[in-house]
Structure formats: C-alpha cells, structure tokens
Length: 457
Image (cartoon, rainbow, N blue to C red; front, side):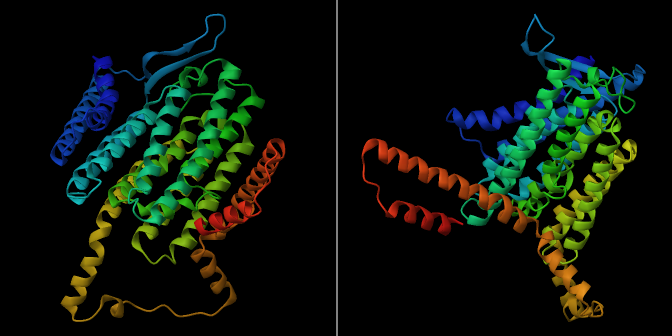
C-alpha cells in the first residue's frame, strides 16, 4: 500500500501539468472552471494519499527511510555509474511535501478568484502546475538527478511567472534577471552532481549518507572531493534562495502576480536552497570551512535584508526582504548544525509569509477605511521618528535604498564586461568573414549595433 500512496503523491502534480498543458496542444482550450476544479481535485487527491502514507507509516512503526525507485535512466553494466529516478520519504522530505501540498492548495483556492477574467488565467495555472510538480519532485528527490529535474521545473516556472505581465517591459527584464541567476545556480548543481557520480558512481542520497536516515546520515565521500561538491551545493543554494551576494533579484521577482509571489518567494521556492543545504548537510559537517561559510552567508543575507527592508516603500518589496531575513537566519542555523530547528523554522515561516503576502492587496484598502472612520489619514496618527542627519544614518539609508549596491556591482563588474567582450568577439568575427569573402565592411554596422544595444539597455 505504501507504494500506491507514494505513487499517487508523486503522480498527482504530473497529471495536473499534463492536463493543463496537453489539452490546449490537442486543440481543446481549458476553461477557467476546468482549470480551477482540476487543480483543486488533484491537490486534494495527492494530499489525501500523503496523509494515508503518513498514517500507514505510523501504524507500521516504520522509522527507516522509505525509498520509491521508479526506474533507471542510465545504467552502465561494466561500471558502477547509473542515473536513477528515485524518491525518498524521510524525516526531511515528508514535512516539506506536506508544506508544499498545503500551501499550493491554499494558493490555488486564492488564485481562482484573484485571477478571474485575467487574460492569462490558463497560462498562470499551467505555470503553477509546473511549479507544483517541480517542488514535489525536488523535496521528495532520492537522487541528485531527480532533484535536478524538480529544481529546473521550479526555476523555469518562477522566471516565467515573474514575466507574467509580458505586455510591460519591467516584468520581462526582471524575469530575465531571475532566470540568469537561476542558470548560475543550476550550473553549480549540475557540476556538483557530476562530481558525486565521478566519486561514487551514483547520486542516491541514501547511499551517500551511509544508509542512515536523516538527520543522522554521515558523509561517505572522499574529503577533498566532498569539499568541492559541498562548495558547489552552497553556490546553488545562494542563487536559489537569494542569499548574499545574489540577493538583488528577489525584489525584482515581485513583478509577478501576488499568488505566485506568495508561493514562490514567500513560502516555497525561496526555501529550496535551504532545503538543499539540509539534504547535503552531512557533506557540510565534514568541513569546518564550509560550515563557517554557510553561517557567514546567512548572517550577511540577514543583515542586508534588515537594512534594505526598512526603507522599502511598497508592501511586497518589504515582505520580500522580511522573507530574506528569515531565510538568512535559517541558513545560519543549518551552518551551526541545528537541522531540526531549521526545518521547523522553514515550515513556520512559509505559512506566515504566505498569509501576509495573500493579505497584502487588502492592507491598503483597510488603511483607507480606517482613515475614513477616524476622519483623517492613518499616516497622520502614526508617531514620527526623530529625524537624524548623522553621516552613518544617511549612509545606511542610501545603502538600504540601493539594496546593498549588489545590482550596481554585478552590472558594472560582471554583466557589462561580459557584454563588451562578446561584442568585441562579434566585431572580430565579422571583420574576419568580410576579409575572407572579399566584402568591403560597412563602417556603420558597429555603430548601429552599439546604438541598438544602448537603446535596449
């Protein structure tokens, strides 16, 4: 029975993704009613199977890790190298998948009314189903390759939902920025997976943890290789959870619809990097350097978010930085080895932040109603802080307003040199082709190209 329940938990979001994405491809448009009912029904079915799985596990007193192996993608008989599609139910994945189902169900019910008559209603629910599938696969992943599949689905759906209002330029630009950071994170995770397979010939977390269930699993890798794999896992977590110094994309992600902001950057997606660190915590524990780095990154993220959050002028950006403060503290707890505390912190923070972000559209209206009832604006009744003109206060205000100057730093010292380098390569290539073909180069080609690039920027 456990196999059936586990399969339903995993298959429900996949079926939802196939329905919402496959029917339009077959020429059968999906109505709002069908999308809403299908989403609710499959989430309830999957959640019911998850509850039945948990009850069955408790009744059978099964304390060990439960592994559901779907099949092998690659298997080389002459070597130990193989890629397996495998899912794991243990003390880390079960609470996280419960959180995923509960919050995705809440967001689906809210979005049904919030997105009603929106031109991209069907597109939103398709991308929501993609995120739901990726999140369930990522938190239940029993192997690094399964985790990578879910990781990619979460990243793709997140970037597309940031750019959801594609008729405006800012959402598209910010979605591209989010996607760029995610690609850096994905590359680090992929290289880490290659290192794991090169060392052990496999990527199953149960095998890598010495067949001891979480959180008591131990690292079985070579110390030198484990250090580099752990460092790459940290880079992947930094990009996915918007840790310092890649925190600049998080407020940009608030360009998307409020339901996606709540489930992605307030509750689930923002914690996926921290979840990765929890999953590979045995590797981090073997190196004091890696553990210290995790603590430093968490504290730096929390400090930056506190300073930047105090000067935000819109509620969604303020909540984004409030989420980042808690994520920084969660990462610090992981670096200190407080795994259970970090897991409880993730669950509590995800629920609270989802409620706050869903409530955000109504807060301004409540303030106006309160002001009308009192006969004056609410802001006039709030106590005024003492103004200070100290140099440190001015500097900290500017630092928070510029969000730590992170975007400026990356634009000046990474993005701009990167673009200029490849523009030079393009000029050299065109000059070489013109010389080989005997064509006289047109003097204005580079100027036109430069002008177009400047206008786009």
